[in-house]
Image (cartoon, rainbow, N blue to C red; front, top):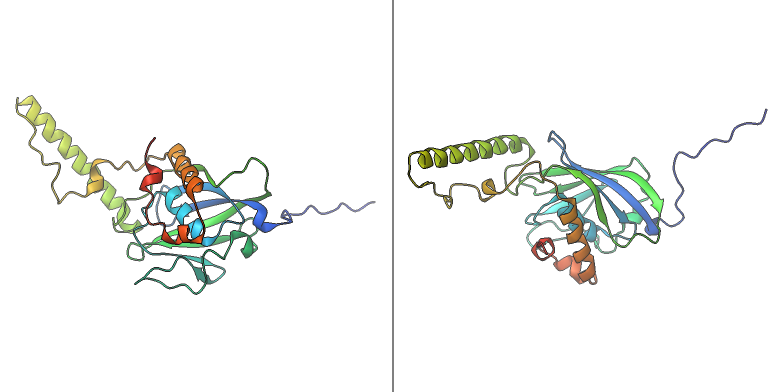
Amino acid sequence: MKAKSKKKSRVEIADPQNAIYHFKIYLLNISPMIYRRFKVKGDTHIAQLHHLIQIIMGWDNDHLHSFKIWGMTYGISRSGGMDFHDDPCKIFIGDFGFKVGDKFTYTYDFGDHWQHEIRVEKIEETDSIYNHPSCIEGKRACPPEDCGGPFSYEDVILDQSIWLRETLLNILERVNAGKLPNFDFDDDRIPYWYKKFSSERFDKAKINRAIKKLYQEKGGDHFWWGLQDYYDYLEDE
């Protein structure tokens, strides 16, 4: 009897820097899970990946960050912050020899300590359809900046819902009494995000519009080193 040939469990990629990597990124210690699925090409460098994660997740790039890959730390050095030995614009996703199932971490804001786990879900040869990175799927909104970290997140969301309920009740009571509402919406004691944050909202189209704009304007290494915020890219057309 002819022996059956064993199927390869992992796809062999001829050119890792020219391959497309499908990642799932999610925040640790938060339930229900806040996650995104996205795809990037293997010639995406660490500096690009940092900014892509910021936009895809919904962060504002206000704090320090670091990647931990195969026991080594990477990221964009900042004055007065962390200093990384390697140039983030010279280290590419395709350099790490990733296989499906491999994981690494991305930490943002060392005070609140938002730790993300990133898992390789698929690697495939590139094709003519790929133009730039894109977000494929996701669930739930990114937490507000400076809200205390994952172990405080549930409490601050509860505080927000209580504030919203009390505010609406105040308005309703005064309207029913024939009076104008007197609640101070500009009270400095109220966190700015209380008025607009929706914990379950995820806008894939807005994320992908921002990425498209970013890649239309991107320049050389200096562009990625100097990129600070994303307001111009996230503005609705």
